Length: 464
Image (cartoon, rainbow, N blue to C red; front, side, top):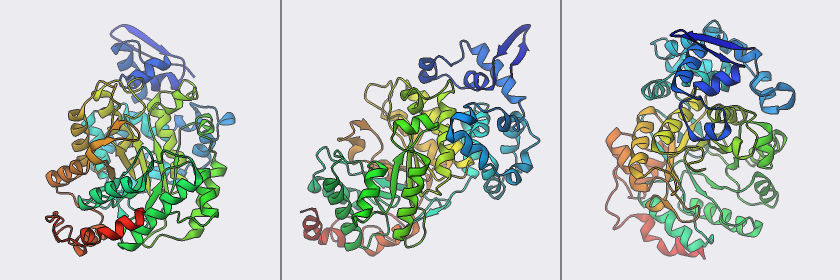
């Protein structure tokens, strides 16, 4: 189906809804690399005019990636909740934007609506929004998940403690873990990106994390961010698997390039569920995504990168995950060129994920060859904190020495919690007080006599 509009005596024509969506997107390098971005600012505004008049129902009948050849499209259509969609089913995309910004869109009504929204619908409405609109709506969304800690409660911000090491050295990892815990980080997960794919190495990392958590009775969860097939094999061998991790994308072919399928994720979810390692809940999947991954795999099918990203959230939603993390600037300037594009993408991803009912966090990051710096990350950190992000990364010094990119530090988490009055997960905050790491008000105490430092020999023994 073709689309057109006339603005100031100039007619703009679009071949299909996929082209309308791509041209309506804010400018970003990845869409130009893919050859789908708007040629001019005038064409971009024309596409937004067309999109604003497009009925939301149209996305249920005009698939951007064919139903017959893509299992993500089939998942989106086949699992659509028509009853949940009913309250907004008569609206156009422009009307939906107005409704989201109105007082009718409450936390409760947005939660009820989430199962009725497709990724294409939320991506479309985001393209009509300014940054402040994305923040205002996302802030009204509440998505709470639980395993050993409760993540996403209003007024709280959690942190993934990321103690990566370039050689998977247990002593180096232990030192970074101690640093993060003493700075009050780790309530989302203690998660390691391993340098190795060796199952014995991965198993040692899992056992070390579990032993630290058990020894100090830390109300958090561990994760070694290896391929889901490795996690399955380790679980079969009796390794202490808390969370199952996998990077995912928004098309079947993208996921095939990652070596995953819906069937494999179903198997992993079932296996981890059977372990019953959660204490306060059973959300146990951890997914990471990022704009540009579909194009990197030559699997975007002419769909703009932000819509491909939102489609990945449909796959994540199937598994009621504990954490979904958009690693927003990690792929590089080929997809998000500079700080402005990274900031916009981070706000879009958070908005789309939360609107779909997912516990979105963000790795607020950039690669060293991008036109961005830590000031840009400070801006996005504060904006996402205001928007109600569920969790962020905690990396020693904000510099990941294994993955070689720049992220956010334990100090950054302290800063944003302080200026926005945000607390940690309640179970973790109580643990910090029991360990004399923080007071009842959540503020850190001088690290002179807390119980974690007093058992340094125990931590070193576990690393050995």
